[in-house]
Length: 157
Image 1 (cartoon, rainbow, N blue to C red):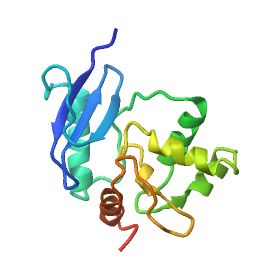
Image 2 (tube, one colour):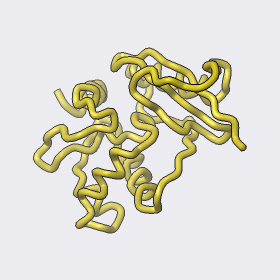
Image 3 (cartoon, rainbow, N blue to C red):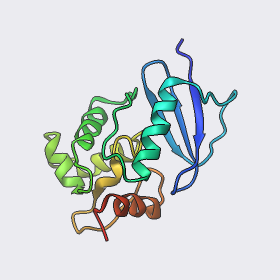
């Protein structure tokens, strides 16, 4: 069984809980979530994630290189891969992602997959907005966090 590790980070959008196994980052959660055990601030992947997130929030990093270790349905995995391709500072619609994964009618399913993204920010689900340019739901269900991230990247003013 793989050992899970976690840390809590402070960020401009509030505390984040970051979890990892031996292969990569498994979750980024908004808030300081209750975890079993003690934080492991020396875990190499968590140190790397913390460093990359800090640089991102300081506008010194536009992409993440820390490996992620996520699992989902084949459709969710396809959506998450498509999300990784949205350039920093740009947005696209749920319909754009549905088309990118070869299922143009699956707009709502894309929204559900987006909502279940276990590593928001690292897999940039915040870059998906409504086709009318509205800031629709976000993984953390806090539109203000989504707006902050898009503003940080220069995608919205």
